[in-house]
Length: 253
Image (cartoon, rainbow, N blue to C red; front, side, top):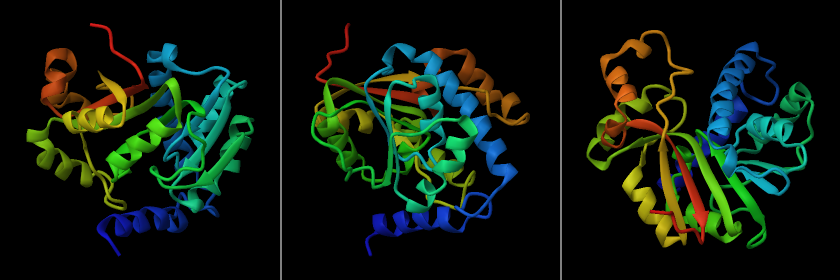
């Protein structure tokens, strides 16, 4: 078994075995946690409303139990929304969130981020929320995104941990300790841009040092205060970010 396959196995089985997030679980802790995440997701949506699709075909990558797809469907009921995740055990919990948000997702299935059952040039928007740093095979994923997007279509990685290359090891060490149950990683912004261009995608970065879900102690850390208040530091330090990709798009100068 390769290193990637081993890490994927851990991710898949987490959703099967988790005390709070398995298909059989009915955990208030999971609901509260995801609803808090939903506040961040709504903020991201409001921040990038002009990038979103109201009536077209939308696919969520790495959506876990699919709650973000349900939020999207609630906001844009005329969009055709497909929810996906690498773990079938995660996708099995989608009906819980459909009931909570009173929506019905148009399609859902388990798949990796780089082998997806969608036709070429068929999607208007692909998004993920705090999931891309789990994808592992980023070159293959971006090629698959480019294959599926219609010309002019967009993909958005919302709320991802990003870092410059020179701080990668330190930033990853810190991130891995926040959720040791599954493999964690950081996105190196310059590397992601290079891979996007190889795949025929233009990319721009919206640095997003959100404080919505910070704990009370993290919120007062000096480095966070400095980082959040001085925008020119965002590319120089580890920082959450939204990555926007467009197929056949030239960013205006």
